[in-house]
Image (cartoon, rainbow, N blue to C red; front, top):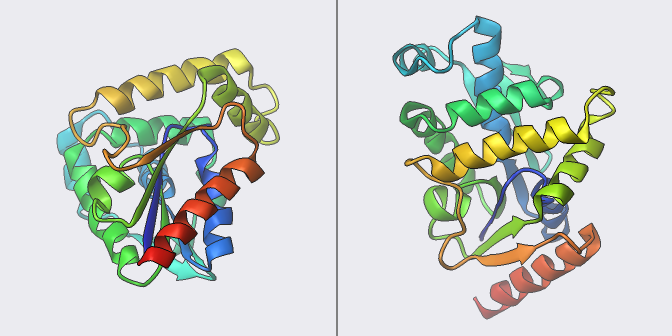
Length: 222
């Protein structure tokens, strides 16, 4: 069974997705980490991410893999675990800019679908239910108010970036949201058959309970 959870940054999907996968005994795939892995590699290479022709040529030599590891997928660059290096706003912004490019999305599509062939999976991202796994048995789209999303993101990032402000996070999110929703290729939007959940006034336990109940009900019927 494949469960997809899409939505913008700060909607609460990452934590809930991990906990849902663990509760169901499914593997967990954070597809945003794959895009961040590409962004980190581009950053380290000094690549101009807006030069699409150069990006396309550079991708041919990129050694990016997703390896199953204890119920999740590790993102590796040339065999190196880059998880500690991709959780910052600079890499996130580069990933957002790269995600609108067809060659980047095509490069990562096969990696994502390969993960879905290994068994039960919770896949979290921005186009899981619309593009990557359109036939998924359970689809969710999580959202929240911009202010609440920014507050959550700030709490997550402040330990690593103590000087970060709410205003800066809000501005960064607004730009990223506009790019993700306006791009012609795989825009951020709910799948027609997705359950849309506004998490603004809900805590993690409430969101997790709602999703768990829905998935178990679908699994029981199938």
